[in-house]
Image (cartoon, rainbow, N blue to C red; front, side, top):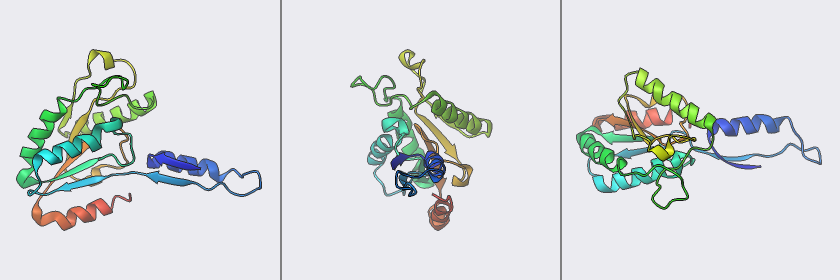
Length: 191
């Protein structure tokens, strides 16, 4: 079996396959490509326009439902405000809606259950006092499994206990002198 998707679903498939055998009595192999907390580290020398373009494509394309989707944007604090200002402006230009329309940038997530899980994560971050910006959903996307493109500012990558498989980008500011600690924190996530 070959699978590409979230780590949680890969674990569920692995547990299910562990109890099954193929026609010859052999265990069924599983090859799983999963994502996790994919991070982009941006220092102050990066061209903000290119960063914003890459972030929009990676975090929100396919409604953030790719293993390779960007989950955590780490911005050096010297340039973070400038990049975030540009990113927020660019986010407002994203079209959310039916993916059969060329003007659509962000379609629905795969199921209502997925929408619920993502929405609970966003609500939990708001309840923790995190700064959350979500696009308003257009009228055509009010029904169905749409999740608005969302940006959440966090203080530590350790706040993320599991991957959020949807159009949610977490932003973490770091000091240049703390780059080694940031890398250690990213590596400690277990992904």
